Image (cartoon, rainbow, N blue to C red; front, side, top):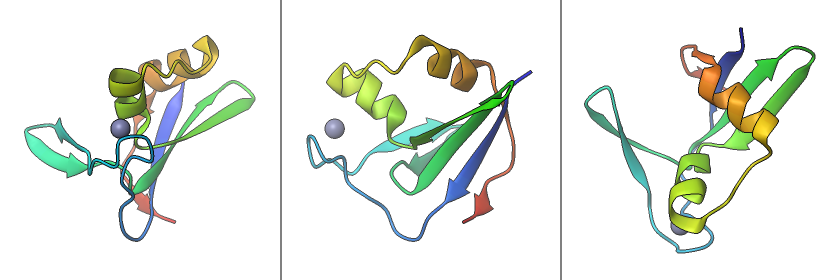
Length: 83
Ligand SMILES: [Zn+2]
């Protein structure tokens, strides 16, 4: 089973493509994207992506490698931790 971590950063970043400040509803709460790094481990490989990844996929047609998508999609979330 893959495990995912969210490593929080100080401040937030706007999307560099559309300059939007992006939010996403998670468990009924609006959270800013662009302030963390997502990490998903699958086997011996750790995939790392900015927390804006869902926005890049939905709004800008970005397609990460299938292996990375599968790792993030099947990962068990862990509690965010500071960098
Ligand atoms: Zn954007």
